[in-house]
Amino acid sequence: MAYRAIRIVGDPVLRTPCAPIKDINHGVRTLVEDLLENVDDEGRAGLAANQIGVSLRAFSWNIEGQIGYILNPEIVELSEDSFQDDDEGCLSVPELWFPTKRAWYARAEGIDLDGKKKVVEGEGLMGRCIQHEVDHLDGHLYIDRLERSVRKEAMRAIRDL
Image 1 (cartoon, rainbow, N blue to C red):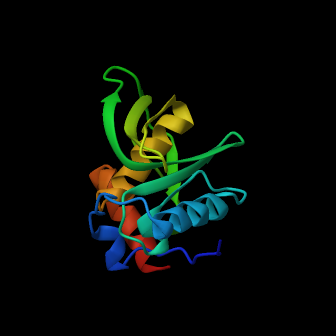
Image 2 (image 1 turned 90 degrees about the horizontal axis):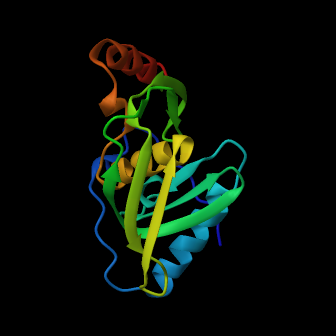
């Protein structure tokens, strides 16, 4: 396991859709170990593989003391009538928080390190985390979801980083 530097907005790896994991080998197992170790820091809710420079579909989470991971996640369900618009932040957009509309509930399906189906789901912060991390794996940042006026403010703040 190794401490991995977080890639910051402007790094092209953050804007590149991640490739599905086809073979669960030593490299993928090491990636999961690194994701789990690096998400286990105060203030970290989730970490996508591309945030540590690896363009594979995997993310880890640390929500309310529960740490986990999923490979090849795809969102299969979002609440359609319940939303949240709390401030959202990102390790790759450090120290900036902006109101971001997300579904209240999210459910993603993928696999674990044994290749077995894995489901991760949740409401509130966990729902937000699932959506946020899958966005990363699709090459998107939360700032892409901001309302136009807020996005302009965010872009100005990012230029000042």
